[in-house]
Image (cartoon, rainbow, N blue to C red):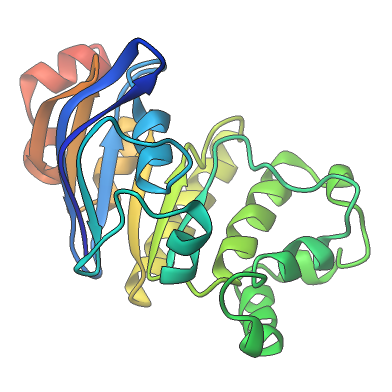
Length: 233
């Protein structure tokens, strides 16, 4: 579904990604792991058209999107939930959700709204509240719900567990697994190595703009080098 080949990207003269290859198949959860500052968000933004690559190719569902606009990429069904939630704080929960269908899924807005509140019943209880008044966990639900309103074919989740309590982290990963079982492909960008590898089929470990490790998630979870580097074992 998603193919990234030889991708280079950065900011001005500063090159962050140095020849990255990545694949996400239909129906897969693929984990993209790495510490802060290694280039995970840069890769997300290059895939989503927010940042223009300096070299390489990106294809989604067989179409070259390397130079496509962010709006065109969203319209194709590749949708990102950015790090930090990025909800519209002065708009209501319902208005935030409805904005998710602005570019894609507008004709099925009512049906998609019902689907989202079935996944997140708490949001239905807060339709009229401003997004700024929600808890961190509720804002993350809102950000994911807004993305679901656009009927994603591939959902990129950038640090969805960031800032959540341990209980909410467990709930968040359970939700991601449930969405995937319903057929949604997910690129999960996380620092939480243990939880990510537990639900992913495959994983990539990004270090200094290149992939230091990649492969089957179960095999990577047992790899001594990864356990030393990220789990302190």
